[in-house]
Length: 304
Ligand code: NCD
Image 1 (cartoon, rainbow, N blue to C red):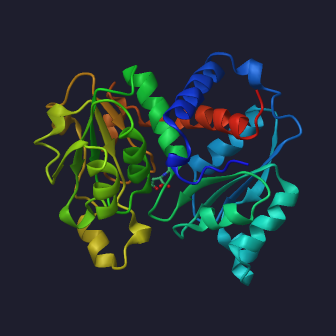
Image 2 (image 1 turned 120 degrees about the vertical axis):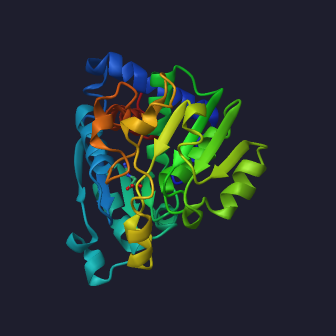
């Protein structure tokens, strides 16, 4: 049985197959509307979510399946002291596949060791978020028409932003990818990603504080929210939260074909005036998340 805990659990070919399948689902949704009849997805969210949980649930419903689950640790027996391992053993009796989000790094991996059904990591603390990466790669593939020869700017909270960690890990497998890593020095990407992922794969990258200086070089600008819930100290969060605000003025210097992405939720880091800019892709990105999750559910349940 296969789980999806880290984006590295999928080969480049497997990711490409998922993207092809998601594009076919977008074109011919009627062909997929009964594929999961009688199947159940459990969404176990020990941490808040809007898009990830609801797009997983919409994905299963559009495949003709059913959904069950909880949307906060408070409404589950976790609040009584139950371990993740025990919760997972039991939910395996009720569902065919589980999408799980947890504030602790590694919790979905622990769950997968005890589970009798496939587990999907829907975000673990400040660590990984593989299904957001699949969403992001489908978005890039549709909006740019390719997944190689790209200069990708990642801006904001690169330290705690799990979507950034998974996206870098996946994109280093593609040809001629350059990264511009834009963050205040307090929020630079973790050392292990530089050593184990960027350097190991001989990837060209720069680290900078300045969005303005580099915005004109980018094919993709991936904005991120400063991850309030991961800070130890509120003063640090307040000092850093509005460090970057993308607005139309800054975008004057950017390319006409820039693709602006954001996993959402947005707080202040993209001004709402940008929403009407043809380069803004972040709401489409949230829609694509449903289709790639449909493809993923089909593949993990081995339904063709
Ligand atoms: C992201 C997450 O949960 O890591 N959101 C999402 O899944 N779309 C990004 C964030 O919360 O800032």
